[in-house]
Image 1 (cartoon, rainbow, N blue to C red):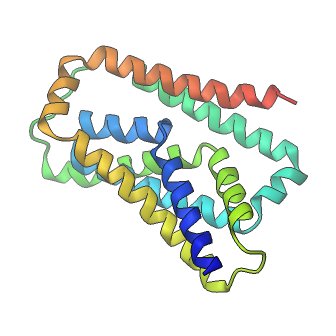
Image 2 (tube, helix red, strand yellow; image 1 turned 30 degrees about the horizontal axis):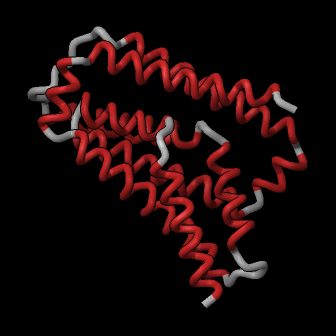
Image 3 (cartoon, one colour; image 1 turned 90 degrees about the vertical axis):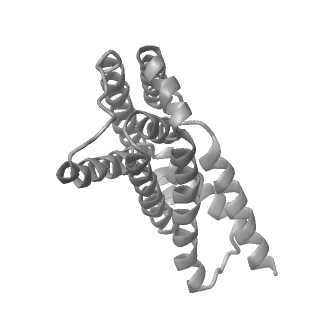
Length: 211
């Protein structure tokens, strides 16, 4: 019963974390509205895979490693923040570029979806705070000696939490009405998204200056 309650608590905590606005949400939302539902779902799948990556690392003791080697943590923050800054700049830069959202040649679709998946994956793993959050939640809620199957079940659970949530975002925001509103206001929406993404990157970098 204690183990079941711990797993449920972890699921609730990480679901609420996934639902909080951040770079991942911005990316999936913009991809779904600006490109296609298919690309939004591919990005959501990338988020799920990124969640598995961080959960496995967290279970292997990343929190202890980052605590023991502060320079590694600072380096990861700087690299992640720099990537978010770059992504924000690219979104801002393309704000006034028109989008062709009608028909795309079939041979181009797999490549574009693959790019959306990779972009989602990189965006997810660009923020090392995700791994620290996972490690903190695991450390606070998991029993000291969890059975081996839990170490396999948790990454799978996280994959479904991340993928399902961002798939819901992709499906909801790729509907005709949100897309029409986006096209009508693309320039300022993209600039707002780019600015927020850049601010999140700067926040991550500036955190390295704090004692």
